[in-house]
Amino acid sequence: MSISMDDTANIKSLPSRTNGSISDDDDGSSSSRNSNDDDKKWKVHDTPQDSGLIPTIAVTLWLGWNGFVLWIMLYGIIFADNVARAVIIGSISASLALPANFPGQLGYRMGDWMMVRAEKYFGLKTVIEDEDDLIHHSEQNKALIFAFSPHDMLPYAVFAFNPILRRLPGKIGREVSCLMTSAVFNVPFLKHVYSWVRGLPVDKRTFLRRLHSGESFTFNPGGVQEVLMTNPQNPNDVILY
Image 1 (cartoon, helix red, strand yellow):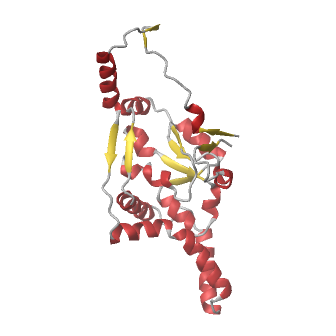
Image 2 (cartoon, one colour; image 1 turned 45 degrees about the vertical axis):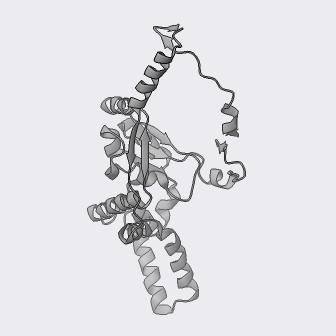
Image 3 (spheres, one colour; image 1 turned 60 degrees about the vertical axis):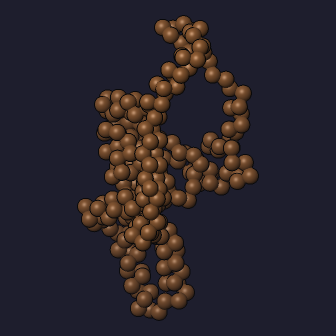
């Protein structure tokens, strides 16, 4: 099932309500006042883009593992001699045996560094519509779910909501995490990198645990099915399952 953005074209806004009744105040001053009130709610955080050497290295260390894992496996199978093959097998085996967050704080520091540099490399711009409402939920220890669509190869939500960037206020910004397919955490090397950037598997156990603990998170609903079923010729269609 999908829904097209074009289907919203015929939706009209309802008159404003005051104390449970419909307001008849439609003059220009009222519109201007409402517009000014809305503008105060928007908070824009814009980072100047910097695609220099250091940010490029950081993004390569973050995203480059996707291709590196495939390359090292093909090299080990086709081109490597016995010694190189033994080293590759040993390295892969060690990565699979070690915990995902190895080597602990050192790995998290590396992940924070990559996210800060990625923020500059991509020139991240965040627009928050109502920060006061987010602060209100944060103070009540409520978990918020940020759903992204469409799914993409670039794990945008990983760094856009990363806690080291503090794009969101209060407890939400400090503890927000990106949930992703559990398959990532079964791939050697890659599982360490995404653990360092505060990624977690999007399984039912993690999902419910964070909700009960009041820890916000972001994820892309639809997963692999959405990627395969999205039609580039119809960019306004959103796959809902």
